[in-house]
Image (tube, rainbow, N blue to C red):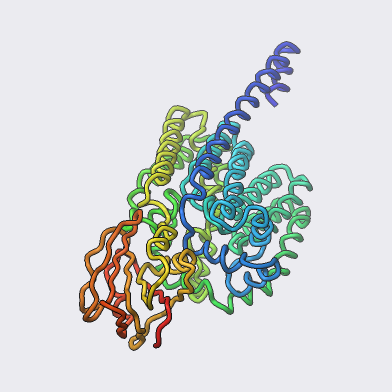
Amino acid sequence: MEAVEALGRGGLSTYLEAVREAVRARSRAFWIVAGLTVLAAALRFATLGVQAYHHDEIVTASRVLRDGFWHAMDAVGFSESAPPLYYVLAWLWTQVTGTGELGLRSLSALAGVATVPVAYLLGVELRSRRAGIAAAALVAVNPMLLWYSQEGRAYALFALLTALSLLYFVRALDRGRRRDLLAWGIVSALALATHYFAAFPIAAEGLWLLHRRGRAALAGLRIVVATGLLLAPLVLHQISIGHAEWIGGHALGHRLWGTGVTFTVGEIGEVIARPERPLLAAVPLALIVAALALLFGRGERRERRAAGVVLAIAAATVAAPLVLALVAPGKDYLLARNVLPALVPLLAAVAVGVSLDRARRAGIALGAALVAYSLGFCVWAAVSPALQRPDWDAVGSRLGEPSAPRAIVTWTLGEASLRYYLSTGSFQVLPSDGFSWFVHEVDFVSNGPAPPVPARLLGPGFRQVGYEGVGRLYVRRYELPGPDLVRLRLRRVRDARLGFRTNGVLLDGIGPQ
């Protein structure tokens, strides 16, 4: 476009100079985005296999992918609340890489890296190459996207596919080409087959395209509707099992606030760090608000309109499940990771805000500060055990094989991981008021140093035989003298102060009930 305008203004020589400048600008943008993609890969792969599997990853590694392909597909139906596409790809992927931490998570890491150039293309479509570079930088270092790029679950693929869907939506909205509408339909169908919450941004995009492009939009909409109909029986079956109903047990307002925290500092602020560290999100949230204020205060009409499109999709992604939660409490599934498709469009709008022509210095300052904070936070989290998934592998090694019946008390969300790394045939119990078990040993795994367990919780005879730190976790062990066994009330020991929100109990060894 610049070259054509130059030809009209100044003839052939001006035109050729404009072409050369356009080529140089495109080349500079290519190498900058390539560098940002390499940075994203370094952040994601450098520590990919360092952290032990966390709660939900155990389901993927040991329940869904533990056997053949058809077992994996069957397990999606009875143990998951998500569609099958990620598990199809993960099963194929792990036939080569294995189901260890590095092998399984590398699929998510690749999806996370691929989201960076998609963000660049989205920024270019919305505004300019500068906006594209800003969007790529913000996506590359965003702690939320980094966190799920290092998790053996569907969320990184979910973010990639919904970002691609958004890209083709913006193109189809702007140009109305059939190939863009078809690409939007295909990518949207893949996103829907990855996570059901893709339905919310896709529905908003589809209605918008139908309004703007009329019957031409049906080329893509038919693909999405057909995919939804194919998934409907699985959706109804998984809803009947109720795996996701735990979400509604947490206050809706807290989850909404937690979404803002998680979008800026990942799961660290709300789930992992103990005590919680929501104030870590204050700086990036303030910078995001400032960038959007700059956009709507100083931006030109076309810039505001471009950012408004993606902000509307982000808002619909969060607002639709929020309305569903309010009008149908039994269908309250609003959670930060479920509305992950709102994050890339939000960052794209911020990228437009920090690349304004009329506020270049202020925009650059805000964008640089947000990228620097996010990058510094990612590096800090990579080297700080307090901001990482707990090292259940090391805890399992410390506990070792049981020499007699024992109970292990720890974080509820750590029970599945500890079982996986112990490999002793341990099993989880839900202690009721009168539930008890004959044990010789009781071990407590706490989040950081914890006080000795009061004798009233254990009963007489137990003595402490060990206490050691394992990363951010501490293991305190109690045994009875000799070979004695005593009946232990499990509900009582579950109430020990271990620094977690809730505790659970594992049992292993052989003993009469």
